[in-house]
Length: 132
Image 1 (cartoon, rainbow, N blue to C red):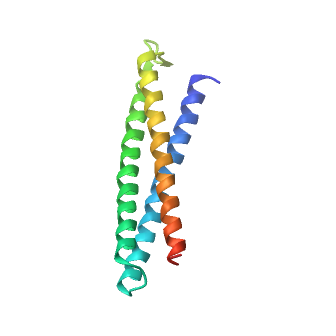
Image 2 (cartoon, helix red, strand yellow):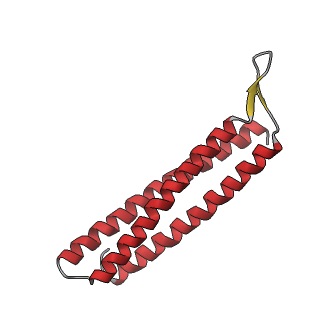
């Protein structure tokens, strides 16, 4: 696979992760809204509502961090290309930058897994408390 194809594939993956993060936020806020409604009607205890809001805060913070990391990776990926004297865009093998990008991608994956775990907890709490 040539470098431009690898970059395109990486950009597609990053876009998918951005979409996942946004959907995770929407799900978390929907569960929080349902929990607040249930709390106001006395259908769930205050501690459950607080736990849900704590998880929502975790999702929001983590997805914001993921989006910041994705922006940095995209900027770094753009730095791997340069314009030659002849006006041709060339891939520049910058090992230090490639290692930095790889570490960032690992962090994005780790944080995405964390968000998934929190969303699973939200789902479990929601099902247990008949919020969904």
